[in-house]
Length: 336
Ligand code: XMP
Image 1 (cartoon, rainbow, N blue to C red):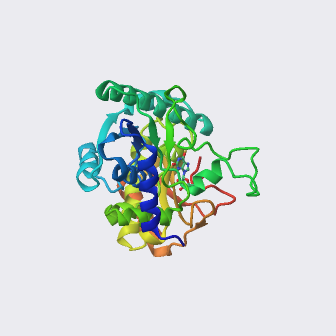
Image 2: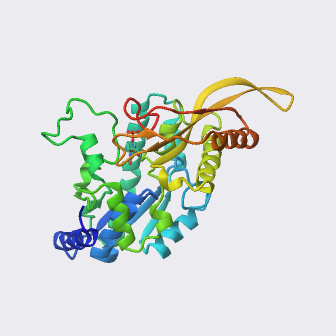
Image 3: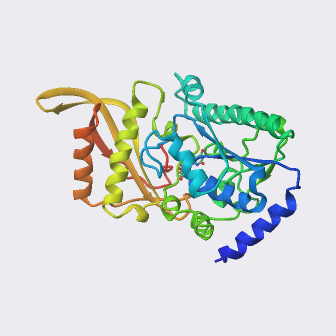
């Protein structure tokens, strides 16, 4: 393995040499580990000529994350006081949800989310230009090595170039007319290395432990129309119970990623002495080294039994809980 202290030092040197003294750099923070570590590296190199934006797209699972439910101020405070990052917060929940209304095709959903991100980002960049009197020159992205090879396999890697499995919107999705140059300080790193680098920079370990969360957020965990009924709301509640139970059982760190999936399917149940016709949800947990392949996680039955009861007892609108027992391949980790 590499020595992360050396890699970090080298990376900071490269960025310092690359970014001119008049240049401004922008970065979208997702609230996840990758973009946060990437931004922190760049911040170390160029200080407050880095300008970050956090877009609330309504699709973040803020409940179970490091941040508290709906506490946007808290998210911001964490970036600012724990991580010392300069961040602007944009509420774009209405924009995203209105554009996703009625859309069911998975790639279309991803494209819409990617495009809307670019719109919001564009506005942020233009506002910044007015403020500092100069167009931003660089864009920071938290691209990791596996993202690079999965979206566009390098020649000779033996992977097919002919089709993209999924359009990861944070790879190659740049506002075209902005002519931004990319800074990708994590491009050669795997997730565990990114976490090690974050630790060196004193990013809180509780933050660095967090499971990966996909760019398109909960939209890829609700097959079909994301805006239908209160699926987002139900999903957040189920996810919160599942993740909290995993943390309570002390197995969070053994798992690469765990989450709930909202199924747009209603089945019949009986709760209390009432017949119900409610939604089914699926639980997914996998172990993995880098997200490129993954094995489904073996929970013990008692744990599953407890979680299932808890979910049906406390989440209105759910009367059935399923466990996803497929690995990657043949499945992907996310459902869309
Ligand atoms: P899949 O579902 O392709 O996911 O097996 C592999 C890993 O990548 C995450 N993922 C994404 N991350 N933007 C991201 O930043 C995306 O569009 C995206 N799609 C999937 C997924 O959560 C898993 O960790």
